[in-house]
Length: 314
Image (cartoon, rainbow, N blue to C red; front, side, top):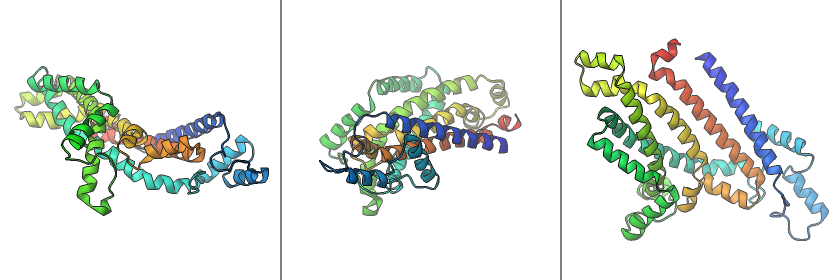
């Protein structure tokens, strides 16, 4: 476990270094005036020099990168060029919205995928398996943004059961807060559910043919015990891996859904930063998303021994 944790830390450092350098180089290659959004027309050279110093844009690219990196290691990601607010503060203000949206989407997808996937693997070709396969095919053929629009039209516009867009903090009421999350969570969870079901179903079919499962059946163990204890745990390796990848991807990839439903998360923040050429904010968001992604995958790797004792032995 200690060696595994050491490897994960080394991997984390390497990935974050690579992401930071790549993001900085890509932003440096974007043409145009970085200070166009903060300086008035006809700005004097003195005003430009003052702005460059204030936002850390003076000096060579190498000096700027290491200056930003030194601040990032201390928790200082710079200051937004548009809002003049520290980047760290802007991210921490929006991050809880994206985290809640991504976490609820994964939880909903698992609540649906685990029972359906387990039973479909237990009865391949049965009625549940055929219905699940049909619905998965339909869901995969619909892009997430189009599915969101359809859900808004049916449940918000036609039925009036849910709000169309907007975000209500928990402090203003738990029920309005949940109602505002239903449509975006379902939109994100739909695609994840399809992948989870198909993956778990195939793994369950293979696991149920293993000798230890056949031995459990020969001993007269009940079907629910065989499915949930003997077959599900070894079949959950791929599901756990994909779940970690999906959660990390959702944290950094909810741009379309957050924009569609007007949610104040990282997705809408990064769109604002890109259109406003707020490069320090973009670089800070990319770093935070990379940290979350790598940490989640490291956590997934460390949980493998909990599912299968053979991993601890090896």
